[in-house]
Image 1 (tube, rainbow, N blue to C red):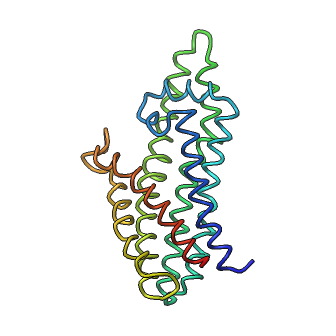
Image 2 (cartoon, rainbow, N blue to C red):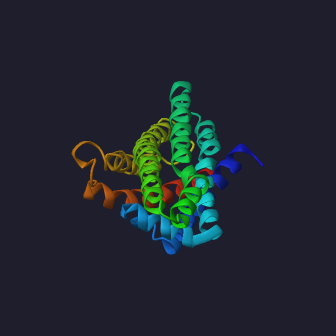
Image 3 (cartoon, one colour):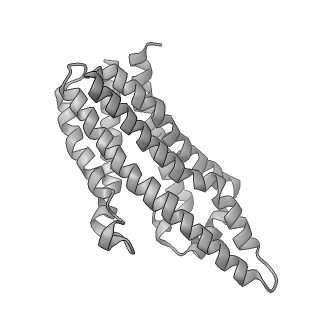
Amino acid sequence: MSVELATAVLLIALPVAFNLAFFELGRSFNYPAILREPADTILRRFEAGGTGLVLRWYAFFATALLMIPLVALVGVVLGARPALTATAIVIGASAAFVQVLGLARWPFVVPELARRYVGAEGPDAKATRNAVAIVFETIHRLLGVAIGEHLGYLLTGVWTLLITASILSTSVVPAWLGIVGIPVGLALLVGSFEYVGPNERSGWAFAETLVPIAYVAWSIWLIALGVAIAL
């Protein structure tokens, strides 16, 4: 399999896998709306989901992990000038890595927290649940909001814009793909500020609405890029 074909396959397959995993989490766990619920609701719902829910989260986590080789392949195939290619690969790999860190809590940390929360018994049950809830909220804010969402969206948006610059500076794929990618990248950048500054407490409603639309557009753009490379 050539590098171009491998890149095209990943560009097409990965967004499909990402959206399937996202859909399954929405169907079985009310994701992402449930993230705005209290810790008690999230942890009890998670524990009730059992192994099937943990495996769904692992599948979602794996799609972020596969972005690391994908960004390297895309950079190589587009063949822009070395500085632009290297920057795109570093930023893209960083975007994938922070999303991996953000999602890793669900298949590896939250299961234990949910077990301890739901299974708390005896006179110390309330204190145990309070302690678990504080730990959950802390990692939820750090790994989820700060690292996975803010840095993840921010770096993904920057990577998208760098790839559009690579497309427009070469003739590997049609230039319109670079032009279409610009608003998608900008939308991801805007969405990364959902919980920044005055919106830190309850979030920015506009960004909350924008991010899912941006990711659907981003997925379609990746698939179109994969088809163009395959042709």
